[in-house]
Length: 290
Image 1: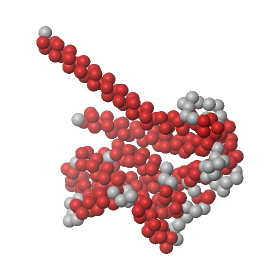
Image 2: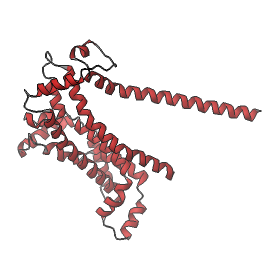
Image 3: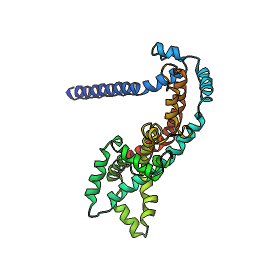
Image 4: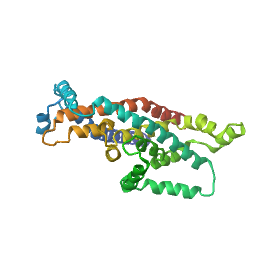
């Protein structure tokens, strides 16, 4: 009887823990989704209704807000469509360069053993701790001297050096990329870039997908650097377009602003839905291997 009671107590304890974890997970999920839900609801409301208070009940004014947005952009030097294309022209190549070259850097530090390896890793960690705002004045002067101000090059090329992505990839490689596998590929005559592109990258697919999502979101929502470097209205990105919509605080139509914000998050959701399956597949594969 004692063994049966002990087993029942253990089962009840596991059930309570499971219920507690579920409640905590649902609570954090609700907290995370609340701003997104509020944005969607406000996109369907009028400006006066938004000013009156928070509501999670959808209204029927989304099409009206959309029409007002299209009318309002006619008086501007940039349209929503053009701003979307500008953001894509910066975000897509920037994300690809950041993820690929950061993974290549982490691969070099993980696989090769060279004299200043520890110093290089410490330098990358030090750079990761420096806010970009500190170096923006010197960066702007440098771009000004090169004649690259008001172009997309300073917003794309520097993304090759992304210390946070290098750190994440390095940590992931230590647990998933075997050095014996690399040595075996070398013995079989595989070149270094061929080994990286055909062996290492497929193994790193969950990490690559994760960082691609983070980098796409960060660059898509980037407001600080484009505000400083882009001066021509026709070259501005979606966050700058939304900023132009709300530039006059006494005449801002918040229904129009939220409708524009709703449009800006659609690419983020699409990218997440496309890449999240690689993350799930990688986690499932790791669980099977374990």
